[in-house]
Image 1 (tube, one colour):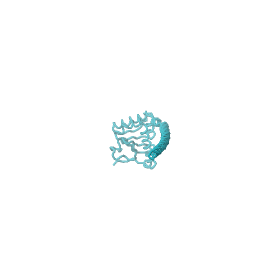
Image 2 (tube, rainbow, N blue to C red):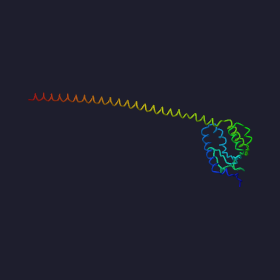
Image 3 (cartoon, helix red, strand yellow):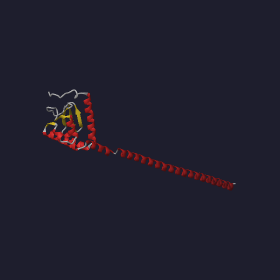
Image 4 (cartoon, rainbow, N blue to C red):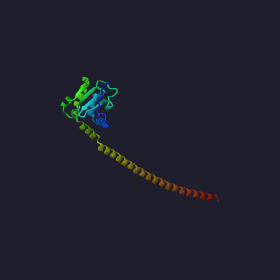
Length: 216
């Protein structure tokens, strides 16, 4: 049975909360930053499981990178291709070294990390770290926010609704005019009908009078 790395900090609720929040932040960054997804893609294809060990502070956790995203956990996943560390790769070093290696642009920090695994996986993770050093994650996420154009989208939507309201008002005005015109035509025809009816009635009375006069 493998001996597990343990410490009070590693199993504390605070550290678990940090892992959960970090996983959420990574998911957001992957969604917002296309270049970051490209960097993680080769690792995801391998369904890579990484055992991270840090000192100062002394912590251990596991990173699973697959098609579903990046998952952080205190224990190795059950489907991991287990080796001595319960993962495909072991990365160990100080917390400062990790931060400088992944965020900074100093490749010397990469040499200060201990990487254990197959040569293929070692090359994959080193290429990913170098690519992350060349890529500004904050800039990539900020650029994605700019491309969202929330204000422009809101203005476009407001303009579309306003245009639709104006069009509906114009349609209502046209229908009102058409109804008025139709009402005028109907009333005029009704007056004409009553006039014709009166004339027809008079003609009938005259005809009856003439008929009665001749028959007497």
